[in-house]
Length: 325
Ligand SMILES: C[S@@+](CC[C@H](N)C(=O)[O-])C[C@H]1O[C@@H](n2cnc3c(N)ncnc32)[C@H](O)[C@@H]1O
Image (cartoon, rainbow, N blue to C red; front, side, top):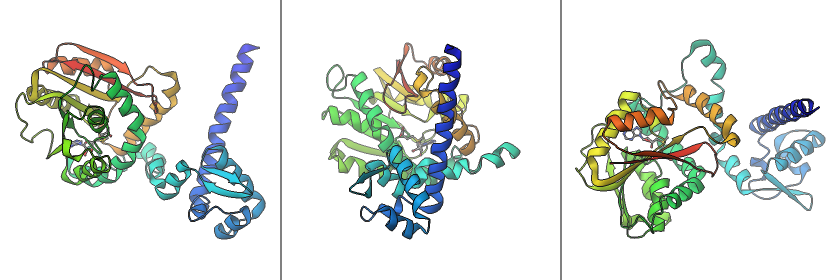
């Protein structure tokens, strides 16, 4: 009986995931969310704008509401914050990558190579803003785990492959005596600067534009280096090269934190597999490393002790390896 109940629960979960995907696909084709962007609208108004029949439109709108994208008040549908985000930046669902899946299965070729240096600035300048939004709670959690502003303060932080600098900005927000140097491509650093300015953290932010493998890094100049979501873009040799450079840039008591995807939370099991698939669709040699493999690479670069802490915040797949010199 129990195994029958388990099978039924799993079946309904799979059926619901599939049905939810169909609702999103209908929005992709008919733009129901976008039809509510200017002001809340009735089913009739939305059906007219989308050129659909009222009865099925109502059912889809109810489904989109159950997914948390719409809310119905007095017979009018209005966008939730998440609905607004999807209506204005639908690309964050990654459909341009998912659309390539059949081709990828046939050819084994990714749609783009986001890990190839020449393509990075172009791709990441649009990706890192939404990524910063998605990772904000995890970044605040990480700053808490590191006891920034309490046990660790007045830090000189190097944020390697900073993107929107979401991780380091969460730290200097907790400790106004810490400073960050964000390292990334110039086009991407513009996003980090914007984010810092919006949070009035720009006086604590410095930038260093260039390739992490080549740009001149001051020796022994930082207390903490953050490498968030970049180890999965590198080969093992590439990681080791970056770790060695970071090691040299750290003070004698310095620490590095590697934030990336790690197993450990059952809640993130499906997300983790989808993440790996997404990575295969958009990179040439991107791969998610085990903590054991990263620790091996860190030790080979000179780091002594390394410990893993899983982050509980969404997306429930991230963890941080803290490595000491
Ligand atoms: C997946 S994003 C992660 C951004 C940010 N750390 C985060 O967790 O949101 C990877 C970032 O690393 C940067 N990056 C990757 N390889 C780099 C390299 N060789 N030199 C400089 N930046 C690099 C990319 O431009 C991009 O901003």
